[in-house]
Image 1 (cartoon, rainbow, N blue to C red):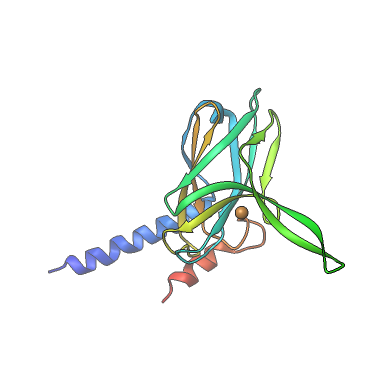
Image 2 (image 1 turned 90 degrees about the vertical axis):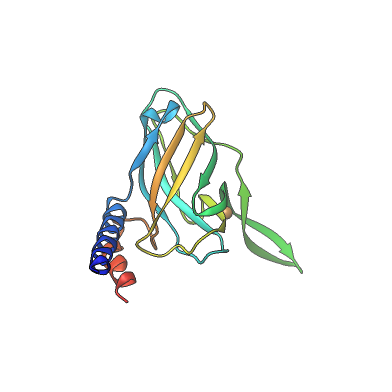
Length: 180
Ligand SMILES: [Cu+2]
């Protein structure tokens, strides 16, 4: 007896922590090798159902003196993660010029010393292929990014409709999502 109320309380605390993690937008548990002088801001991942694909966006700034080369990524939420670039391609179809959004796999992404690179909709993104669970607003996923020198950066990325703090009230969404 009494185990039910206690369970309910701990679930509420877990939700509150999840909302806080989302509000903080980003935390990294681990930052080794060339990632030591790297800062990641505005990270978010697009909501999508299990089995679908999604994409992670963020801005990465290299405060160090050496270039950082991103070569691989993995996540707890998808079968595979790849660095992609979306480019607009123009093709001639039946005598008409047709614009086509095409995604290309990028083998490595260089963040030059002292510079920032933004992954954003319509450009560079971290593609999540084959989600292993539903991604819902208010949740977060873990993403591990590897550098050419073996450094690993672990990010906690909130599920969101857009960059946190860009006019999107993620807090309100998180509460709404858990309200029923
Ligand atoms: Cu893609």
